[in-house]
Image (tube, rainbow, N blue to C red):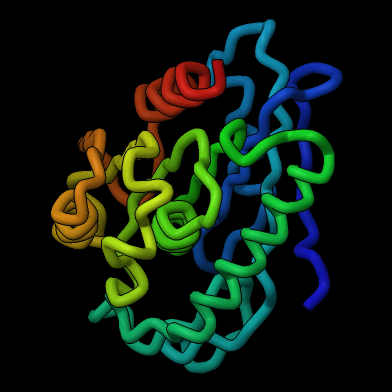
Length: 222
């Protein structure tokens, strides 16, 4: 499988760290590229932001409509979601390939933050916690666990102590906050310390949340 196409932004020349940020179902890599200036990162932190475009695929719950997605979803009303586990694993491998490409450019894994929103957050959770090398941090926004079976004490051993920021809108009609809470509880029971925040919004992000993410990135890429 060829490498995913990406939108790439650098906050300064010669980046010493990277953030890989995964969009939600039906969006693309441009979806979050515009928030980089709003993160409030310090001027002396040179970061490469990578916003990959998910592959185009038919989505069962949308009557087979073809859109960008990290894996197929069978039922929206059961979002945990009868996920296509093979598709989840394929996207996990694509993210590992992106991390490996950053490693080849001189950015070690422990200088890489993996972030994602909604379906992209589901991959960030799963690919991040199971990555074979320690990451700098994981950001899971308005999301859920697509396949709890992939997360075990053994599979997350390397990244069990990796800082993990999770945030969710309390009025989210797409991914109910109970799904976000269930994900937090599941990984907490595996020994992951989740920094959990809620905001009075729907299925989106808000400026205080973006600023919090910026603080998280700056702290963990120092």
